[in-house]
Length: 389
Image (cartoon, rainbow, N blue to C red):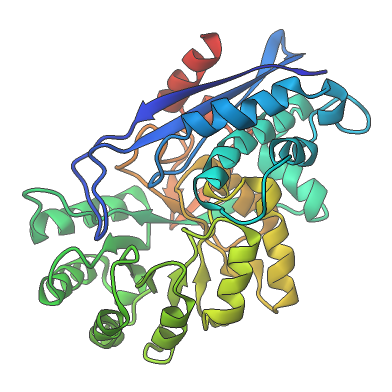
């Protein structure tokens, strides 16, 4: 078996929404199709992938380095020992040949998107949902039948007042979510507190509200917010400062008793390990948000639970960023604590399989081979066209 083509295209994610740091008016994403010569049910097997929101499309890196390396490799070197499926670990090694250590920024995003497509193809060739394949390979066959998900939204955008924010969160509750997340740091502290109180009034308790500063604050402001947030007993206080400022994160923990969350902008196991070593994160209450689609993919992500185990962290403290089906499969297959969800934004990438309701804050895993993109019509329409081209 072999990979016959790898196709990549740029898709716009343009939107008027913004968080505390960036707006998404010119945001893009890469979509990837890995085409194989394997056929299942009379159709060729094609694996699909993309990069998570918040990082731009990676066409240059893919087309100049990573795709040519895969396509020029001996096909047998990319297959498993039996020769009947792709080997994601060998493909990762091929992509990273002649790459220096470190420098994990945009490179990790390009590799992560291709890696997603490879895993989608691998699971389709085996005729299994990816989460079941992962459970069989890495968790003794035990998979979670459903996964906790929270609704991420609460962005700033022109003309959006507090009532509109409250209405948005009410909609998420009506959809079956029990925990919601909103942005902070893009307005004054007083205005953000008013927004938080409005959301709490809708959901009924601070323990069902998470807030996200998207790395906006310096230490002084992070602590100022921490003191103001403390009385509300929030689900978590996310990414107060720069994601690589581990000293700020550690100092913040000494001023805030509630749960903290961070990690979505750390792009390797080594970065994740440095957060655990130096970021003051507390294994009994804090949350880790590493996103495989931004951090070299699932092959790299598999190293992270092993690292966490060595530092006495449970994988249940991981709730990946991204709100996509890939992380949902990883959460169910590896036994993570849950997954982000985007009911309203970052379409067509946000959200899960069509006709899969959220019930009491949890999503049941669909029995669709691969990642399950074919069960999300608006996303599959984009992906199918890419492979056809």
